[in-house]
Image 1: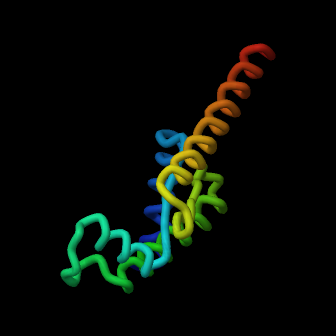
Image 2: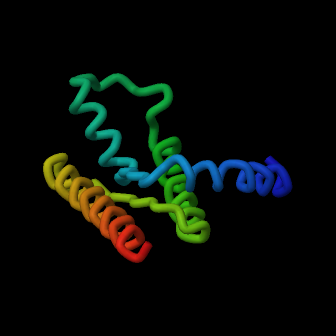
Image 3: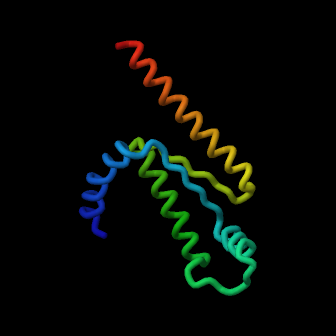
Length: 116
């Protein structure tokens, strides 16, 4: 994709994201942990065609790029590293972020109404 095409997509989609999406939550882990989890979840030792170390690393790099873009464009984006955490811990962290975000938005709306 050319730089021009990329910038055109940003101009088109970033306003839509800001208008339609309140919060973006994403998780990642290192490639080895990801592969171990996949093998354990599927109780299989067969080599995967798509889920491999290179693809997981590419996915993680994409998420890090998205985090930077979100920061630059003031998009509400949270990225959680699940490498050394279990599902329960991550679930609590995600829920805490979502609830805090919702609380801030509601307080902001109430303050706007009160001022009017």
